[in-house]
Length: 146
Length: 256
Image 1 (cartoon, protein in one colour):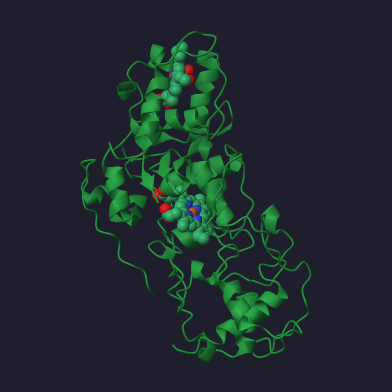
Image 2 (tube, each protein chain N blue to C red; image 1 turned 60 degrees about the horizontal axis):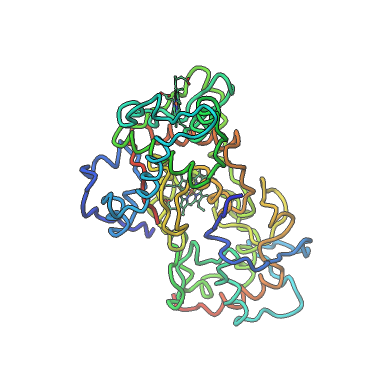
């Protein structure tokens, strides 16, 4: 077989999303209620969103973290997202930004259906677990300098 | 948005003016490389892919198989007999009733004419002979046939290119038509042209075929790749070659 190296999957570490969705409700362009009971942790959240093995935001977005190399630039910078959006708005944008804009290339990090030919490795799983989503939001809310 | 300007090309040891890397709006991946990588491709002595070309030249004239002949026994000097062949590939093949590419043609010649075993796809020897033959078409504009019997296969290739795939729900066109020039992590995205294949990819530390690249891109979308030499990738290869019609064959290219 081919030795295939991927930009988006640079480590062999097993990344497991959720296999069942926590129910959530969309209200006014956001998801007001957290997906989990455990409050998001911004320190863990920073690890989640910079994890090169799991579709890190850095593939596409510039971020105010120069200690990480090679930021992508095909999506808007995340500098200041914590002041531009509420936690509820960020939650929907991470969970499934296509609810707001079906044409966006922003992946749906917490969706299970409606995909074509998902790789075996990721089949039937979300990109992020519900807790990953909450931790990511907690971190992004700290990015208040635009 | 932050689309960075294309890196200026320093030298053109292939003897090509910068314009040769672009035909109308179609641009070679070369134009998206940094100066240092361009310099590697420009200089046949530095270009890592020339180890493969040299190996391919040896294979071309090496007797192998039960027939006791080499490719050169019949075809002679590849610089003459194989000039331009790659520029017209892939193409429709009536025996397969499907698309055939350079790799599969080489293997068919091995089986039929040399009575030798076909090479494994992506093996060093197949990449080497492919690189050697593609090199014989350097500078000749790619011009594939998409009409007639090729048409339904071309259509399937086109239909592969546009839909979103994988867990990240992305399509070829979203990256290579709509966002070329932008950075995807450390990679500057090109138009995804195939006129440089087989190429030497620095991040792979090896030569690679178009089908290996397609699989890499499928993995980037978290889509299940198809097998090398699958009908899906052969049809896609035809569509992608047509997308880059007119671009001179630049094999063997060097890419990041």
